[in-house]
Every structure is written in C-alpha cells, then in structure tokens.
Length: 195
Figure (cartoon, rainbow, N blue to C red):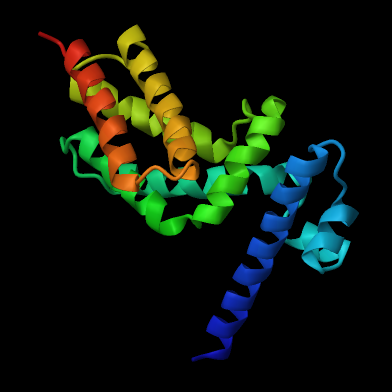
C-alpha cells in the first residue's frame, strides 16, 4: 500500500469522525447550540482541523447531500442519450446504498428531524443534479423543462429520495424501499407521458 493511499484513508476516517460527531451533537444540542469547538472536542481533533475539512457547520450538514448529488450528476452526465431515466435513478439509489454508511445515514435523518429549519438547504451540487434531471426528464417525455408536469415529477423524485433515506434509517430493507420508490416514480411518469 502506498503512502498516498494510507494518507487518503486516514483523511477519510478523520472526515467521517468529524461528521459523525457533528451530527450527533446537532441532534442532541441543536445546530445553533453546537459550536465548532464542541465538534472538535467530540471528534478528538482541533477546531482548526474541523475547519480544514469543513469550512463551516453548514458544510458538515451538507456534506452527505453534496456527495450524493455529485454521484447522480456523474450518472446523469454519462447516461446514454435516450436511456430511460428511471433506470439511471434506480442505479443511483443502489450506489447510494453502497456509498453510505447506514449508521451515518440514520444520524443524518435524526439530525434533520430535530433541526427542521435545515431541511430546505440547497447547494450548487444539488441544483446541478435537479437541472440535469429536469433536462433529462423533459427530453424523455417530449416536454419543456418548464412544463408543470416535469417540474412536479422532479419535485416528487426529490421528496421520494428524502423518504427513501428515512425508510432505510428505520431499518426497512433497501430492496423493499427501492421497489416502493421506483413503483411510485414509474407510475407518476406513466401518467404524464405525452399521448
């Protein structure tokens, strides 16, 4: 194993420890009631280290969503033109299951439950994912990206993602949760196809 790969794994572990500690504290004390110093102490690192990995507390909150959005952006950009969007979406859900630690997912869900004001946050990465998804769906349906059907379908997909995360955090089997989400989304798509 190279020194670089050891260093990268060490950084990944430190980043995960900081995120884990922060989510736990945000759940226990609230987002506003937690300081960078609190997070550093709980993660057993210096405040400077926390800020080196995450520039702000909001960056910690958004880390998981941004990583997830980056993965779907990548899939949408490499998707073959004309390939069914539902297949790409299901592939992404499977990737999310592989890439996300179940315990960390559960902590994120609990943290958002006790800090509802944070739920509406959006990042540049999330906006990219929504724009690419809207464009792909509009093309697939033969509609404009501004078409109300496309906009509602994309919003429904976003809401489905949130519920999917909650189902997994509640211990529902990933395959069962994926099937429920996909059945809903495929039904919604079928109902708005251009005749």
